[in-house]
Length: 94
Image 1 (cartoon, rainbow, N blue to C red):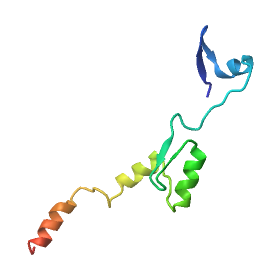
Image 2 (cartoon, rainbow, N blue to C red; image 1 turned 180 degrees about the vertical axis):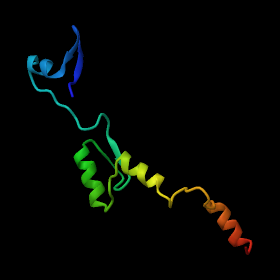
Image 3 (cartoon, one colour; image 1 turned 30 degrees about the vertical axis):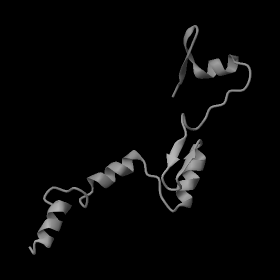
Image 4 (spheres, rainbow, N blue to C red; image 1 turned 120 degrees about the horizontal axis):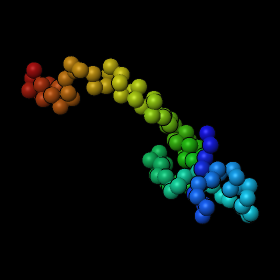
């Protein structure tokens, strides 16, 4: 996929601009530090975030996997009683 960047002269292909630029260009993994709930720290790199999640015994899933889990028959399938209703029925002796 071709990437474009905005320059003073207008849109240009990114590789052409990089070839013409002099000096070092640093491109970070994240635009902003990302909070990792697994270890409670801010990570400024995707690789350190991924390592912290794996070290905590967790797994990173993408949007496709999350959609599959949400569509599974065990989560929110029509005809299942909501948890609150089940608890009320049990507590009322039913």
